[in-house]
Image (cartoon, rainbow, N blue to C red; front, side, top):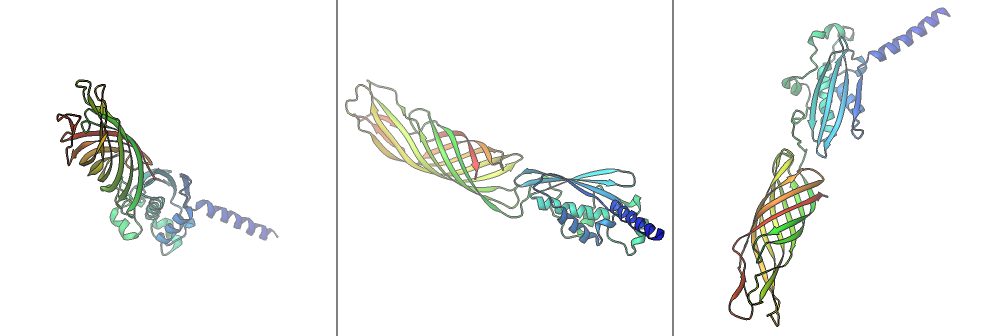
Length: 336
């Protein structure tokens, strides 16, 4: 009976002792990125032995989402012999990318399995343990799962994608009408995002704008009042610059320029409308370049293809559109 009790106690102690000696992989951070089982399976596959047999170190993983296409993972290795801690940060475009890279780093720190399990502690000398940074050559030779972008500080997506944008802005036109005119515009855009987010994205924009009426100076109590409205189609390039994006756009606009005589001396007014057509170029900045809600500012020029002349009752020209009209706008847009 005594012998049976001794065997039972010894088995319990051995069980708890083995459990406490196993490597501990602790998680914290973003709850939407919890891949403990996947990382554990990848480590065991790379090292060729169960994690329960690892005794040299514990590992702490802290995952954080920086944006929709950028994640970071802080991997801390705690050496059991002297509790020395070393930390490295891994960046990637997705949760899976950074956690897969962490699994590779943990496997490299643990090392491959030995032929004789009983010789593991002797063969794994503490002086040979380097948890800070795996050598690039070893990383590529040990596994094919190492993401190329794990060390990059800029996000890189796995494939290209499309995005829809909608925005509103306030605008100022210098000389399409007799004096500077305030207006507003609405725009819809379809953008193509390359796989490497550091490269220039391409965007097609459709804009509609409407400006407040302005009028010429009164001569003999006669003046002209003019108003501009148009739709524009633009092709833009968006080049990321840190947290902002540089916009370069070109296109054409088509609309209506209307005029009407005003003043006490104008007895009968006959409103007139003519076709407005112009080519357009502009540059701008967008911040942030990958956020859901973005602010932008733009400046450029519009050059009418036909410069119309307006007269009242006599032959004298009341107003003629300028050869070049400057434009500025400031607004916000939403990524749909």
